[in-house]
Amino acid sequence: MLPPLEHGASRGKLAENVMHFARLLRAAGMRVGPDRVIDCVRALEIAGADRREDWYWTMSAVLLSREEQRPVFDQAFRLFWRDPKLTEKMMQLLLPKTYGRTPKPEEQQSQRLTDALYGQKKPEEQPEEQKVELDAHLTFSSREVLQRMDFDTMSAAELAEAKTMIRQLRLPLPRIRTRRHAPDPRGARVHLRATLRESLREGGDVIPLVRARPVEVHPPLVVLCDISGSMNPYARMFLHFLHALTNDRDRVHTFVFGTRLTNITRQLRHRDVDVAMTRIADAIKDWSGGTRIGVCLREFNWRWARRLLGQNACVLLVSDGLDREAGEGLAEEMERLAMSCRFLVWLNPLLRYERFEAKPAGVRAMLPHVDLFLPVHNLKSLVDLAHTLSRPLARKTEKQAWK
Image 1: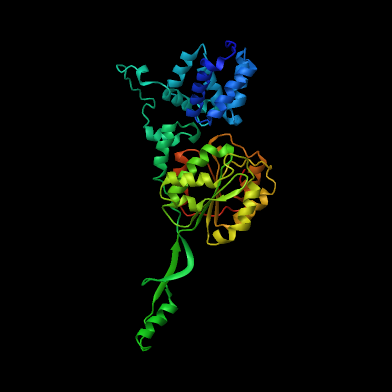
Image 2: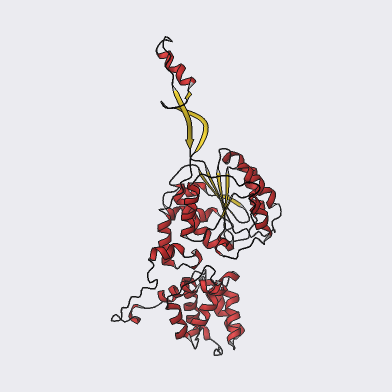
């Protein structure tokens, strides 16, 4: 049980402890500003909080913005506010762990919380004579482990290293043959216009035949990325991947959607990734909000499809398929999108689970119209995506329906 608050406690240790607790939450990735710290202190003074349960619910009501933040808050609350088994739990957090492909949501946040607790330690608290280095990954290299680690479980340092590795990734789409022809001595076709032009130079007496071959170009790449609350950690990392693609090749068009559709192609063209991400944040008005996939796809098909998908474009749809409107009108818009492009690839982070099933209405409406269904949750999935799209692509036939 926590001690009862006395009158004027905000001038004592209460305000200071709440401030340190807010710093811990902020270092763990939660947005907790000074205004919430002040409101939290006032709420504790008003509520009294004689019991630990009252203390917990009062602070969580003020400091939490979304329900997804509760696992981090629960762990931080137990560790910070005088947990009798604090030492044992801290040792458990520091021990190396190995997770399967389906880690529990509350365990995914422990690494970030550990980094936050480390960041709050003072240098003098760590004895200099005890310097022990442990190889937590045994025979696996750190780069190999990082490639298989889920984006949502990475610490701040691991995310920074992953972004550095993402800058080196490329997406080599195979070239496609167009109707245009270019002069080529080994071409199988006679280029009539170039032949007539050459005959005029000789006065029409000699007509040299100019050969031509079909022109092969990289198809346009159009990306539709979901930025709703459930896609937040994956969308941020995928935008870094798209920044590398945009600055590596031409004809890359990127859109993000939550409750509305936003074109961020111009923002991604800036060479500096930090400047590009800042401009993207200013342009997006519905980050980490709800999801209206059908409405956003309808807007894309109506306003952008004819001008961007008319040259055999490849479309990457990055979304978990969780639609707020239960897939209303989504099947029709997905069918229209699939018929407008050359190849439609759906990247879904939920495929990291071995027992993934197409039960949500949005997922069932989208699956029949995609040509390729792949996961996107770590660096290895991005590398596998590049290898898959580097091979010749073929449209899915009607018999190859997704289960």
